[in-house]
Every structure is written in structure tokens, then in C-alpha cells.
Image 1 (tube, rainbow, N blue to C red):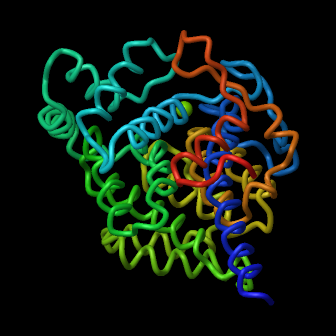
Image 2 (cartoon, rainbow, N blue to C red; image 1 turned 90 degrees about the horizontal axis):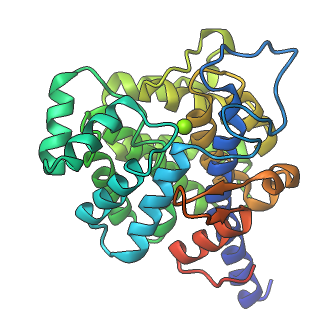
Length: 326
Ligand SMILES: [Mg+2]
């Protein structure tokens, strides 16, 4: 192959994967929205369409709203400025979102009262030392797009975006792990089969993320778990395990997302994390058109500014420094 054509081919693949992360994460959030807080659906009756729940069909939730706040902070400041990020989170929190995590609410409430983010996140963790919820993992993916060519900065900013609200080592480690998996998937050679590529990405990322040994074991075994043994709670370890299980045990974006969200309980967050991973693995073009077309959400809340899939593609382009045409 002509080297120029070859270079373009590789670049187009990377672009498709980077856009796939953004659209995949938000599709997963919206697909899981009506299934959140419900028990797992029976395997013979899986939900496969965007349906209405607490919000209209196709709506995204706090996972995406916080991710969009992070994305806008990344576009405004390089490197990531934690004070700017926290201010954006507080503005979002004060816009009365219908859904806010308990831990996130506690931290942002303290910051809104004038406590520094360092003190607020420390206080909230001290109040519940064992708490390691998925609130910083669910919003972490924009860092993987913005720093897709800078692995050390990706690691540092994945950590920092967690620390402003979630200081538990499992929360911080999960954010680094997820974004390193996305990094490895974006850069993988196209000839590697998807299942092998994902396993390789997990192996490399688990090694670099420096997560606790028992967390690492759980990650390594995610692909051999059976559906009945999974608990899809808001615990960050469960979210990582369930999202990886969904992608590792399926062969398409669509199948992975159907499996992820039908675990119920924290369905939107697991859907969002699985969507980011499957988006990086299979690319934007592999995301079902009917799901992309159904996406719709207001951000900032109350602004009248409605986001659809094309806006997310444009956001990914801007974050990654790509051309706006695709
Ligand atoms: Mg949510």
C-alpha cells in the first residue's frame, strides 16, 4: 500500500475510534437510563431500544452532563485546571440536575458553601472511608480523547479529575485504568481481532494503572464471569467488572451495550463505561444508527441547548484536535 494511503487509513481508524468513545459513552448512558434502579432483565426479555424512563427516550443523565463539564474544562485549559473543573461541576450542581450521586452531591455541596475542593473531597471520604462509588469513573472518558497522544498526561489528568470529588484509591485507579484501556484500543493495530485487542489492552492498562491486587484480579477475571454472579451496584469495582464483562463476552457494539444495560441497577453508568470501551474497540461506524439518531439531551440544563450525536462527534473532534469533517 502507498505509505500516504496507509497513513490516512490508520488516522481514519483512530478518528473513528475517538469519536466512537464519545458517542458510545452517551448512547450507553441513554440506553441504560430507563433500566436504572431496576433488577436485571431476564435473558429472554432484554431491552434493546431507547425507551422512556424518568426522562424521555434517548435522554442522557448526570454521567454525560458531568463528562460534558469535564470536556469543556479540557477545551478551556491545558493542562487540566482542577479549579476550573470544579467550578463547572458546581454550576452544573446548582442547575438542579434530576440525578446526582450521593458522594458527588456531598462534595459539590461543600464546595458551593465555600470549602476548597481539596478539603471537601477529603471530608466526604473521611465521613465514609469505605465509600468507592463510580461517580468519577462515569465522567472520565473525555480525558482519553483529549490526551490520546500523551499517555503520561492522560494518566495524570485521569487521576486529577477523580481526586476533585472521589479520592478513594479504587476510584482514582478505575479512572486511570479505563482511560488507559481506551488509549490502548485507539492505538491498536487494525489486524488484531477485537477480543484479542481488548484483552491485550486490559493487560497493558492493568499493569500501568497500579490498581490494588484484588481489584486487578477482578478485572482479569471479568471475561469469565457468568451473568448471574454479577452485581451491578454503584461500587466502582462492580462498574468496571460489569462493563468489561459486557464487552469481553460479546462481538459487536450493539450486543455489548444490550448486555451491559440489562444488568439493571446502575445501568446507565455501566452502559456509559461499556459504551466508551466498545466505542473505542469497534468505532463510531459500528454504533447502531437508530441509537445515534435517538440521542437527545439538554446541556447546560435550562439553557435550551440540545445535544445530539453530531454535537458529540464535533466535541470529540475538538478534544482530539481532529478536523471537523468526517
Ligand atoms: Mg446517571
